[in-house]
Amino acid sequence: MKSNLKILFLPLLALAISSCSPSPYAGDEGQNIKLVRDTNENYVFDETATNVNGSMSYELFVRSFYDADGNGTGDFLGVKEKIPYLASLGIKTVWLMPICPSPTYHGYDIRNYFAVNSEFGTLADFDSMIATANEYHIDIMIDMVFNHCSKLNPYFRESYDDFINNNTDPDSKKDWFNWSYTTGDYKYGDLYYEARFDASMPDFNLDSEGVRNEIEDICKFWIEDHGVKGFRLDAVLYYYYNNTTKNVEFLSWLDGVCKSYNPDFYMVGECWSSDATVNSYHKSTVESFFRFGNASGGDDSIINMSKGYGDAKNFLKTIENNERKIKSNNPKGYSSYFLSNHDQDRISKNYVEELQNKVGASIYCLLPGTPFMYYGEEIQLVGKRNTSPDDMSDVRRRLPMVWSKNDKTGECKFPEAGRKDLDTTVQVELGVEDKLNTNYSLLNHYKKVINVRNKYSFIKNGVFKSMYRELGISDSSLLAYKITSSTNSDDYIIIVHNLTGQNLEVPALGSEILDTINTSQRIPELTETSLKIGRYSTVILK
Image (cartoon, rainbow, N blue to C red):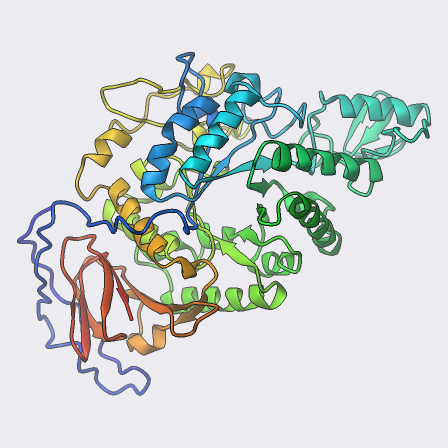
């Protein structure tokens, strides 16, 4: 990065904090805001701020992550081998996409809830992975699909037979699915059945006592018997389609079941809907739901904010309002923010400028709740949905992790063996090893931001307050907000993000700089009246 880059100060702070009188902080028009260059070779990390009390999460696709046995398919022992790497990033929770036997590469149609996909290893391998994760203070969360199962799951055929034969024995499965002789989404034999995603994925009847008993056994198996610490709940909107009240009831019931096996168990739900709907799901006792509205599209998206064309005032107000509504519905509730996941194109396609990618990471990783990073985001892994209208495959969104430019040990093959027509050679060249050894890389940036987050563990359940008005600006050049501990009002931090390619001078919102994320290698300066902050950088104040 060039140290003699000349950046003219944009006079965006010509408004007073609330009075429209001239700001004393803008300086003369055209003035350069000069900052001392950070001479450290890389970001500086606080080695005492670990993942022990952290709340950063990491989503990974086992099949594409790391192959320990050399057969080209990612496996549990591969995840185990990379646990130290994840811990070094500061990760607290690792979410594994579906791991149970399934006829598909992605696994969201489960054939057997009491087993693991043999391509990933054995239950003993899984337990070994869990043990290593525990040693590194990492919780393993698994994807759990309770809305539907695979059509090849024995449940489905047994239920059909019991329904046709009107079997009313205590162990009958006749009501496990939504059967009808006259109407339904798809037909099987003489009956119609409900399946909102695909004919191969029949929906459970979650009112069935038998289904709920089975779910209790499934939860016990994974939580009590195999040490899983959390569930990512797939498709919670579809449990009882278009019936929020019943979905909330079911989620609270499920939460109670899980906590009966581990009081500290936690879940995050996929509720792909508006903020208003997501907030209503917080009336359940499930702690968290993903915030899709902030992940993509509109002025409220983190992507737009980090690229400089979002609406900062509205962004902060939306988060503040949502956080307030969450806490009113469930005092223990919190949001789960992210940039992208396995159902979306890779976030790298949205960023031509790596510095903008870095500030995007800074934003979502320093919000309340539990941020989720999708594997490969730290190295700008690429991949997008197939564009054919007749074949909207997501397999390219789940491509193999790149670990090294030169050492291909552990690198996985294309994840869907039967779709070689979708295989692609378009991928990043540099992997994790290369990026770890590159000063100020995006990977090291993530490591720094997570390090800062872990230092202030109260961020997860903290109270969020916008400080946009206090900045005294009328544009979206910066984000400023305060996060206060929910248990001690004297424990707080003020976070300021510079969203522009210019060094900026703003009113001093605090009296002390606690931490800095010097993305552009410029050291911020704080006086009694003003803060100077480097381009695309972040300052933590008190």
